[in-house]
Image 1 (spheres, rainbow, N blue to C red):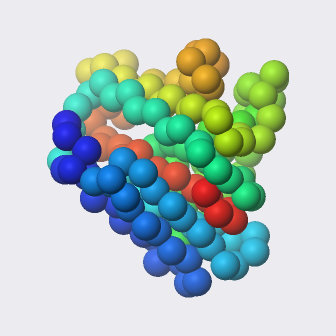
Image 2: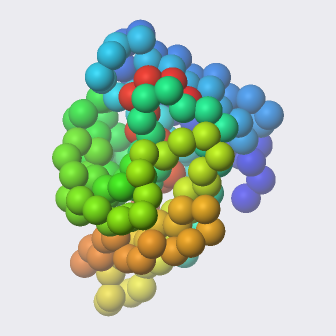
Length: 160
């Protein structure tokens, strides 16, 4: 899919901003509310059952989680529910589910690249794995559903 076909949707968090540059391939986001995350979702027409995307972090002041979300669970701030990797842990957007998933990692920072891989198999469900700087960190989620549409999503506290 061509990057110009993507539209970024903000979660409506007050005092936050999203600037999409270069046809939506580069983003600058900020939230003035200290401690309240700002979420944004890439809306695409793709319903592919096997997806891989990467996010390269150029700058971050605060924290960032990279992952997937269903449209119905794309909500403001901590109300978001999805599947995210934040540098050390796997989260659902509001709480840690696997602490120490990336034992060698730490907080995501400038220069890191995070990859998200999802595959849906009829009868076998949905599997999600994360990559950091090209290294597969292993399976993070396995859900029994196999027909749900997920969208790339970033969960930011601060500025990136």
